[in-house]
Image 1 (cartoon, rainbow, N blue to C red):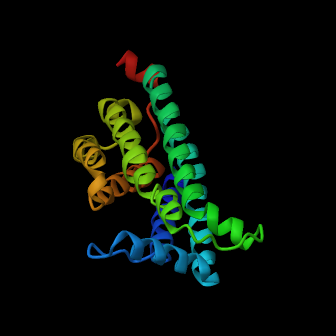
Image 2 (image 1 turned 90 degrees about the vertical axis):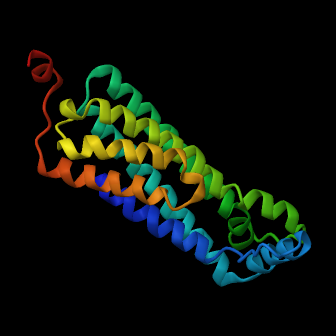
Image 3 (image 1 turned 135 degrees about the horizontal axis):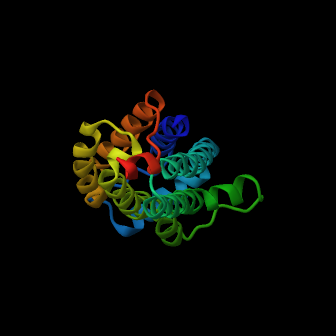
Length: 210
């Protein structure tokens, strides 16, 4: 459960650092202007450093997420636990893919000695994969995890209100592509982690007997 708190903190900071060092693309920008902004961003060593730091934080968040979901798995019955454990790995893989897509070129320039490429269109396509990996793939995996935990909230030993609010988090995970609903998903994970630290889990055998 402590890993769940670490996951939320690392992901929030990692995403903010990544976005803070990404090009500021406006709706009025032409394709050529947007591509030029990506090239300009990678030409700055400070922006490359920020992108790399953000990527490392997101990858660490993914590792903490696996640890957290394995903790949830241990609190559920066999079938539900396996689902949560497997989806935790999927979610972590999505976060890792997002970080690698966003920081791959920055790492090649800073660590590999590559020159800054002038093909801003390709850079833009690759770096923009960060958003769908986090706010679509990871968010949908989270929605499935939260739904599974909600159905088995009593076995997991969670407070009743977390079981009810879980369905709001499920909807938020499904529509997280519009960015802000993702906050509800992370708040629910944080609440579960804190509640999990405060409560002793009910074994599946005891729950079945009851």
